[in-house]
Amino acid sequence: MSLLAALPVVGSLTTAVLLLVLSRWPRIQKGLALGSNLLLFSIALALLVEVREGGIQVHHLSGWPPPYGIILVADLLSSTLLTVTAGVFLAALVYSLGYMEKESLRLSYLPLFFFLMTGVNGAFLTGDIFNLFVFFEVMLLSTYGLLITWDPKGLISRAEKLEATFKYLILNIIGAAVMLLAIGTLYGTTGTLNMAQLSVRIQTLRAAGVVHIDLIALLFVAVFGLKAAAAPFHFWLPDVYTSAPTPVSAILSGILNKVGAYMMIRLTSLLFVGFEGVSEVILLLGLGTIILGGVMAMGQSDIKRLLAYSSVSQMGFLLLAIGLASGQAIAAAIFFLVSHAIISSMLFLAAGGVTHLTRERSIDRMGGLAGSSPFLAITFLIGIMALAGLPPLNGFISKLLIFQAIIDSGRLLYVLIALIGAFLSIVYNFRAWLDTFWGKTRRTEKRSLSLYLLLPVGFLAAISLLLGIFPEPLVDLVSQVGVQATTPDFYVEAVLGGVT
Amino acid sequence: MVSFLALVIGILFGVAVWAIRHGNTLRIVIGLSILSNTVNLMLIAVGFKGEIAPIIGLEGAPADPLVQALILTAIVIGFGVTAFALVLSYALIKEEGSTEVDAFRRLRG
Image (cartoon, rainbow over all chains, first blue to last red; front, side, top):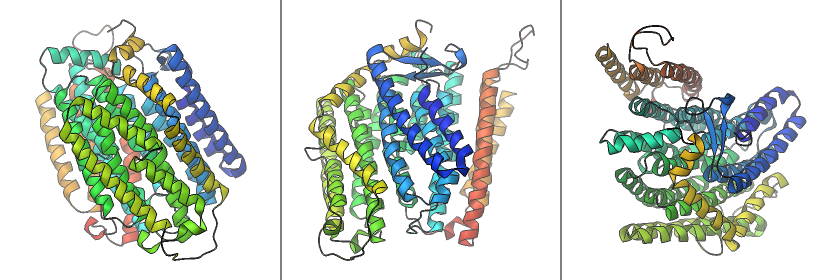
């Protein structure tokens, strides 16, 4: 029993409710939001240290022991992701305080922001597969609300926003139905919802020759593929990212599609261990996603849409590493996940700064911004260099680890395809930077960005650079995470402690 | 009883898919609502192991109470999402001046 494991969920939920109550006092509300986000960040850090030293932390909700009650489990994988989540949310929160319109910030944006955080933290922590469904719905419902929040700069029309949200809503309702179907079938087959117990029973049933478990696993892959925007399910992503308010797109690409990837890791390394067919499907999805996202990104001229497709392509690399499912590959996947969360959210925030300055979304009509805003030019350059995988940034190390994992698994054709994808990412990323910041100056408007908008971008860029120059601590951490995540025995032992 | 449930689930699923495939905004929302209820029925079928209430002291094979708790949760979530979907489609129809999704052409995918 550990109370610390429950705090990320309870803390963000309490904050969300308090923010609703405090909506008549906007100053106190803003202070509370910032303060509790900082607090949640330090809780996540404390949890990470605690898990690293004291092993996996388990919290039994209401004191009901597993397998009867719902449990929250903080292992190294989830506590690493909790820390990243709190960091990216903090950056996005500071940005929103300067970016969003005051009224919508006060009435709906801030409370929904923390409800979203509750959903994400819960999805990372829960050890019960139905509870995961509930947290997914908390997350999605708050996302719908955040998506239709009016963008104050007036660059995105109301109709576009409504259409994108409607598309996202329909897809996710269907996704929820499929997920419930998969959970129901799994429960009917195994008689449990506890993830540790599922892990044990699925192995037993598979050894006894039950074949339809493979189909259930594929249903889950489809659901989490939709969340992670893997190739055939990616088509909602560009529209949604483009029409969302900038800080929300940063969270969507930085954290929300990582939730799908996180569950894919749990699928291949905890629930359905040793299902080669399933891993092979994830690998193929990854390859398709890399190429499709890369090719589509080449043809985009809208700056946010280009970044959206590049984030599709990068998710492909992540899926490729997850599909390999070895300890080394999962460690590479987690390094990639952490660095991409930082880079892509930073790039979306910087792109928001660019559109704010130019009142323009198309990169064909921009140019020469490097002269008037060198800070944005430098941070954006750091971001695209990291995304393209160039040294000395964290993106280089993450790509290196992934290529190493693929080469070690002996799939040379996959290495070739991934190399093509990495090459494409260099081309479209630099095209975006050159068109925006280099060349002829198109507009000379005297507008400046407030500190609220610059600070988060600088913060994330500094972390990206720091992790690129001193990667050893993170590499150490992710190799531990990789070992722990791919050995289901640790998880099962910590949760059940002998009961099966 | 289980085969009767299976038949109902099949028919409802077909109706839901038919309604979603139709290009009318409201019909899509109704179809999605039917779809989520179909899945709830499927969960009932999973837990349908007997017709006796699961109380200690009653004779016979009890129905599984856990899936009923799951369905209650799923119904509440489905209700909330459907309410949001209706409001969103109302705003969308007013904005676009049409109920047909083929008229919504701003997004490319």
